[in-house]
Length: 333
Image (tube, rainbow, N blue to C red; front, side, top):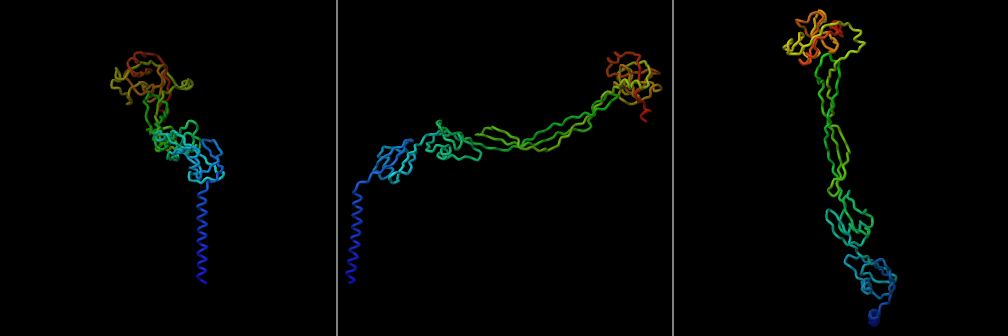
């Protein structure tokens, strides 16, 4: 009984295997059934009836050559089936300039990003491309990568101090006197420099700070005091004979007056009994002066006005003039 069952099971297995082999051998011997596919090349679509088994066979059948940089979608190994759409994308040469080097890159894609990816060019955070990254390459077929970098520099600027004149009335000519020395200011400016392909194209000031505060130079400047007509009318006056002299010529040979002042224009020699020493006077035709000197020949209503040069003294000569007493020592007490 058991032996009969085993024989029947073995017979069924052998029959099944034979049927499968017969089916496979029969299928291999029959010709492939033609299918309708669409072939797109260079933008032109064509309906094709083919018995090709793969996309590679289809292209060979239609005489379509594929370059090493061309792209076929779907891939060449894809089995052909009814309604399949096969597209051949042709690579185009694009001139790419980057980092000072220009080369031709065959590219299937049409955007600048596709070109850079194919060329293996990476962009820095500030780099830019011409045309734009997502623009189409266009008929010119040229792409330029502009390398952009920025750096920050700090520059010091010296701000020269200004001079402030403190004007004071002066009865005698006097040189300017510095009251406060000036000091230059220092300012630090921070600039952002932008370079494109190594060339400076933009400079922007982004910050400034004062490193040293400047200080003005203060100068005391004596200006000749000129009394008004009203002031002269209110002051006592007298008519005198006025002669002239120059330091180190004739009288006042040592150039020092009786009061110790240096003899110069503005010093007037007087008779202290008539005009007190230290008085501020106004001599017609001469101007404001100080009664700061005496002389053996200066007696009574006579004065001797000082000039800086003998020529000026000679030009003055001897004159009858009116002298106004603008201020006397007694008024200062």
